[in-house]
Image: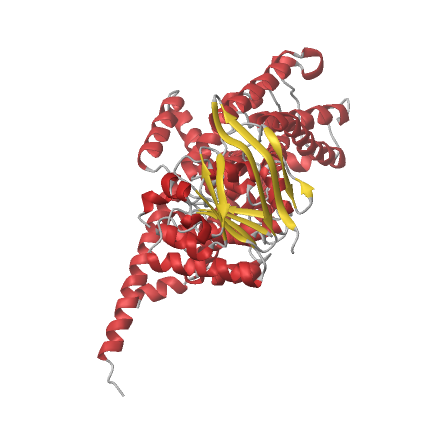
Length: 351
Length: 250
């Protein structure tokens, strides 16, 4: 009876239809909408960072969770998107440092296509390889792009970075900017969801599980990998575009392997096997970082320990662990129910 | 007489110093059902790999339905109308049975670049048809990697059939199956061959299956064709007895 009641609840129905992302996503979204009502600006600020980096991690998971290739250079597209936006932003803003709303939005729009074009170039080489070779080549390209941005002073301002990215007055309010970011992240995530549930998304899963066989279905393996690489780069570019106006500046480390590692960490924490996992990973990673840094300088030690525990004891991440539990419970309930039904049939008087 | 759907001339392949395919000439007519037999290491799988683009031949020519396919990559060979099922089942282990077949159906429809179509409904009817045909309808929601060996092989066949091939290569289609499963699988292959004039070439170690289901046999030994003929002719041949059939107590 209880099993039955449990199974007809709204979250349970969402689980049946969408997997573990089904019930988790509305909970996360409700929490996200509530964040600005927390006292003080601090958590709104942290919440914005959670959303932007979560989107970045979700774009990374298009490669890792869906296509089965790990990239250690994904931040290159996040950073290139951030720089494209920052440079256009700087060119469009007035002598007084102010930028109009239309110009601000235009500068945001330029990030994703520039990131996508960069991904097209980098991906052209990377999709020729798989596994560790793919990972190393993405790392190499990431560091190459980092170094170009770092040392090309006349164009990118090198290690000074670009400062003074102050958005128009309406967006300077942290709550307004938060909801603006939330809207963009929700739309981007919806688009990514649609793609992962399309024939293209399922073709990605065939590449993840068995590339040789996928080719024998008639799938052009490299062309599909390249398309996905560009899509992932474009969404990383959306996150990057938001970063500059959020932090009021960009700098070369946004392209570096440390930043790429953040996407990997978030995905491992939340769970690569589910669509929303990397966003949950960002919630945990970013909020924990905000809290830990208040008390200690030992943040790398803290996150290192957490990753160690996750990899050892919950290799599917937090959602992977929960999903396993839910599946086991549902299987047990299903078996118990079948047994009860059989018993009822046996007890029923025969006609 | 039906035209040749497959014509192989002078096919050669070396791996390092090993000559695994020596000057193979081979033809198949549309609607034929034939088998390749031979001891382990005779080059049966390599031959199929050469025909489907998994390996590039060093020399020779492969014509399919009047057009040359020599050296084309697998995905382009497949798009011409050739499917294959692998000896060791080669499925998509983390996807469900239904997702496995549906992905194959969508690839056949050339829909895999459709980013915003529904991956669930596109080709769903065809997917159900293939699942029912292969006796997998009741197992559609199981994760493929957790299937029993016989069911994996059936899924392997289902994936190949979802490609709507004109020519189907089966590499030991009944390996790992129970006697009943093997019989129903080969009955399905016979039916497809009869009703859809699907051309089938298979390899098999079970001589009972070979003699019952192939109308022509090709005996391969050390990369060379030793003998071609009807099951009766091959059974009666002294060389075939010595090289291969002797092992099988006929």
